[in-house]
Length: 254
Image (cartoon, rainbow, N blue to C red; front, side, top):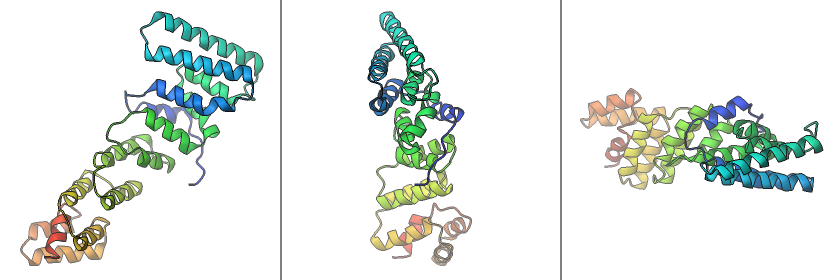
């Protein structure tokens, strides 16, 4: 994968706002696990880990006033330590990232952590923390890494994720179309019909070519459908509607 330019804070804020299911305790715990071993100063490393653990306890029990007080004290203690030990904020970058996270600045923490952890790792951590259900996280991460906007990556991840039970060849087509930007509900409907069609290997071969947009194969399939009395399906194929693909694949080998 090509090197990815770090994303600004606003971009991370947009990504993390794509769901109201963001798992802040998970995000903070995983970020701390990844970065705290890299903090060179033992005193600061201990303060980082203590602050993260204390704040996480509060995040898990937000109505506990005692835990809220403990969390605030831990935040202040970590910031005071960093101000004293690393006043110019240059030598303990990992600790400053955790300081941002324990103070609830998750977009800022993600933006600062990205150059330290690498974009793929940071993107995967963030996407996992968003806790989408029936979602293709790997596809969304690949799209984000390719420069697609968060809204688009989330939409495609959700589209493909709904159909994780499909055969591998259909998922590959869906993934490729998503990367190309040519995946929509209509294409997904056509893929879904193929998944239910119980095709033979020969029929699968034909369907794969049609779903991949092979112009010659689409013309041949449309002509065949028209010749055997399926003019509506033929017209759909010629018009770019892939819904008849499963029918065409079946009839062309019967």
